[in-house]
Image (cartoon, rainbow, N blue to C red; front, side, top):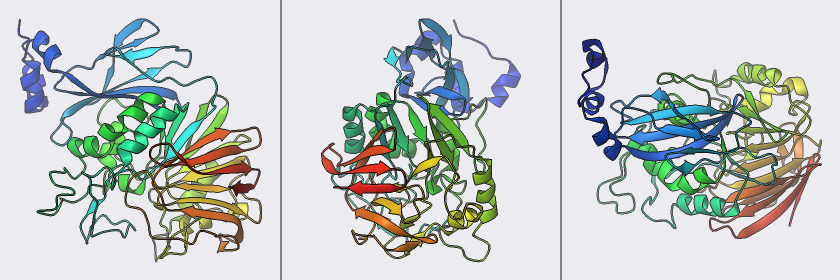
Amino acid sequence: MIRILPAIARRAMPVAALVLALVPRAAQAQSARLESAYVVLGPQGAVARAIVAEATRCPTITIDGSQREMNVRAAPDAMFAVLVCEMPIPASATAASIENAPLPLPRSQLKSIAAFGDTGCRLKAAKGNDGDDDDDGGKYQECNNPAAWPFAQVAAGIAAAKPDLVIHVGDYLYRESACPPRDAGCARSPHGDDWPTWKADFFAPAAPALRAAPWIVVRGNHENCKRAGAGYFRLLDPAPASAPPPCIEVIPQYTVTLAGRSFIVLDSSKAADACKKDKCDAARYAKEFSAMQPRPGSWLVTHRPVWGFRPHRKTINESLQQALAAWNGKLPDGITLALAGHIHVAEVLSFADKRAPQLVLGTGGTLLAGKIKSDLAGEPIGGTTVSYGRADHRFGFAMIEPTAQGANATFRDPAGGTLFACKVGPGNVACN
């Protein structure tokens, strides 16, 4: 039996969706394809997401034996020809699945955390018009070569480590320009802020890690509104939505609480690394820091490091550092560790004035930055000096084990092998 839709509904629906709506439900069930199922964490708790191709209705989610149809987050359109669905997961839930695929739920204990960022495959023409301070144009990574773009291996390594939580510190989509003709390294690659590119650059390679644990997703500068913001809000931002969510310039800071630990998520996608004329919006970020109410032992999770070193721009981030003037350059009381990405290296920094240590985790797969000297001790930054500093230029991720006084962090290569390990204490870091 074929369903007949009202005329108003027919006019409002995209042509592809209208054609599917006129197909018998049995045929739709055979053609619908679950592209991805995952769990993101926000201030409201855990949210299950499903991305479905060739479907006009959301799949059924089963939570503790009870079934219901998921809510539509975003209907298919010309750029994203997939249905995005979601459903909040109660904190009391013990099991959940979509189409018989188990979902990773928040755990009562937080023994290990996988943290990484900057994962996409770099395809960017020499001159961009994105208005950002990203200066890595004219570079084309070999997306078809797992050794040159190892994100899939990194995700598999994370899944094998069986973390209780995954934190991605931002920059998911790097395929911004077409692959040059006759370049075998990236031939046939999609590009732009659309579903084929998001699938190739993030969802397909990330699949093992998405199944392993719930995620805290941080917005990077590649996901600002002039770049891949539409895809980020449609697919990853944890705030519930009942229509295609609009791209907003800055997401207000929020706190994710998991197993008694607080993670304050700061959207630094628009925080200029270097202040030029009106680009340094320190007042905006001072307001964000003022709104934070950190519990003791909270971690700051953001994309741009508050403190970090680049090969050609000695220190960043001037916007965030100026915003912290009211706190004498330090993070608000209660924050004991800062995680970020943005610089395509791994950095471990502690400071002479015992402010919260900074970990930079930008080695998830995109082209690595140039060499930074390995010993950064004594370097001035943000009104203080580095008491311990280490930089590493190898792909991989960090496994972090929270402790009563800090954390143990092991930096691993894409296959999960140990590169080096660090102990993070109150205001200090030491690595082997």
